[in-house]
Image 1: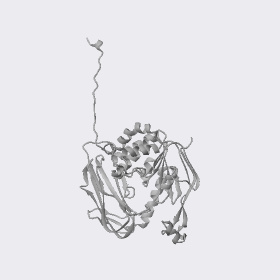
Image 2: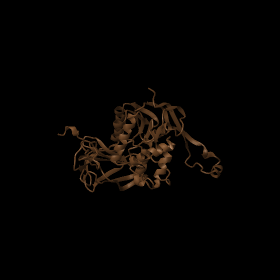
Image 3: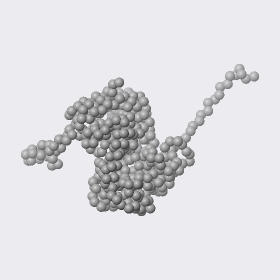
Length: 418
C-alpha cells in the first residue's frame, strides 16, 4: 500500500537572534551590523520519521515547544525541511491555525469562496457545496457579515467546514476540538470518521492524551523536536501521561487535607496534585451544581499565586463517573491571554448551554506550567455536577431534538374489494 504521508529523517532548524536586533537600516548601520548576526541555531525537529496510510489517523502529542506545529506546517507545505524528505499524496486540507487564512474585512461568504479555491476547488465546485458548508458551520444568519465580527468559535466552525468540504485526501488538524460546544464537537468527530472511512489520512495535534487514545490509530510523542515514542495510541499516550504525572507528583509537597471555601476536602495525591506554587483556593459551579440539560453553566476558579507565575494554563474538564471525558478545554487552546499572574484572582468559564444526558458528572480543574510540563494545582473528581433531563438516552449528548412522523397513504388493490 502506498502511504498518503511519508516523513523520512526530517529535521528543521531555526536561527535565534539578539533581542535587540535592529529593525531598520539606520539602526543596523549605527550598530555596525553586529546585532544582525544570529546568536545560535536550534533544531525544532530532529530526525523525525513516520508514515500515515490512507484511512488512518495519526495523533501527535507533546508539550509546547516540542515541534508539533512546525511538523504539521512542513507537511502542509509551509516552509521546507533542512534535512530529510516529506511526501504527501493527494489534496491537503489543512487546519494549521483556525481562521488564520480568513480576511477580516471580507464576509463569511467571500472568505468561503477564496479559501476553498485556494484549497483546490473550482468556482463551480464551491458554489455547489456552499450551502452545505454554511449549514455545517451553523452560520447561515451571519454568512454575509464581515469575519472580523465573528467570535473565535464561529471562525473555527467555518474554517473546519471549508476544510472538510474540499474532499481532502490528507487532513492536517491542529487542536480542532479546542473551541466550540459539545454538539458541534460531536459533529466534527462524525465528519472526520466519514473522511477516514473514505480513505482520508489524518494527522491530529492534541495536548490531550485521552483524545489521542480515543480517536487515533497510531501516535507520535515529540519532546524538544525528537521522537520519544511512536506506535499504538494506548502505549504512547500512556507513557506521556505517566511522565507528566511523575513530574507533577515529584513536585507535590506533603500537606494535610484542606477544605475549600465551599467545603470540598482536598487530599494530597488522592484528589489533589501539583507543586502548589499556584493554588486553586475555590471552585464554584454557577448558578447551582444541579442544572437541567441544555441550561448554561459557569465554572468559576479562584486562585492565589504568592510569587509571579508566567503564562499559566487553566484547564477545565467535565467527565462521567466512569472517567469518560465529555469536555476538555483550556485557556491556551482557546487563546485566552495569560501573561504574568501574581496574587489572588478568579477566572470564569461561561458555557452557554450544556447538552449532556441526565446523570452525575465531575468538573475537574487544573492550573499547569506554561509548557504543560507539570501541574501547579489539579483538583480531580472533587466538584460534582448533576444534570437532569426530561428523557434518557444511551449516549453522552442530549441536544434539542424532535421526531417527525409522516404517514403515507396506503394504496389498496381495488380488485381485492368485494
